[in-house]
Amino acid sequence: MIKYRHNYPLDPSDIVRVFESSGIQRPTTDLRRITRMFQNANLVLSAWADRRLVGVCRAVTDFSYCCYLSDLAVEREFQKRGIGRTLIERLRSVIGEEVTLIVVSAPSTVGYYPNVGFEPIQNGYIITRQR
Ligand SMILES: CC(C)(COP(=O)(O)OP(=O)(O)OC[C@H]1O[C@@H](n2cnc3c(N)ncnc32)[C@H](O)[C@@H]1OP(=O)(O)O)[C@@H](O)C(=O)NCCC(=O)NCCS
Image (tube, rainbow, N blue to C red; front, side, top):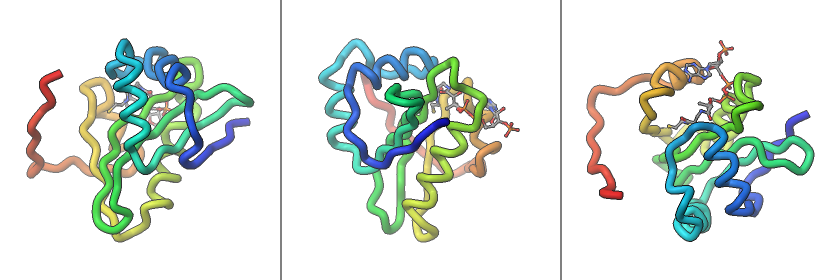
């Protein structure tokens, strides 16, 4: 059975393992940057199979108006079992109805987000990080 935790402290090396196994592109060779990413996010949900971290959902929000979902990743062998969907459902329940949830999809998951409640937008803009 999968258990879910809210803002539970995560070991950066577990995060790297989940990111790398999931296929998500994140700066996993820079452990200090991964550590900062999680230290400074204010809403992190995690999925656990016993003591093993198998899924991560990292967001930044004001709990009042907007929430940016930055990273959603599920370890490869645990994918397609509803863990990603449950992480998003839990995120939505924490932020509530006043908050718009925004995600920038990787090309491989463009088809995923409509499955879990997101609508595409035409009016988004971005200034992309340099590295
Ligand atoms: C995207 C990801 C988080 C989905 O997690 P998951 O636990 O496997 O997804 P779920 O089991 O909750 O899937 C929910 C639904 O979406 C479908 N789905 C899963 N991955 C999909 C994909 N890449 N594209 C389209 N649909 C997808 C599932 O089949 C399921 O459909 P159903 O409800 O009709 O059965 C996971 O595949 C992953 O970690 N991918 C690599 C990391 C990544 O690129 N993350 C996004 C960065 S923006």
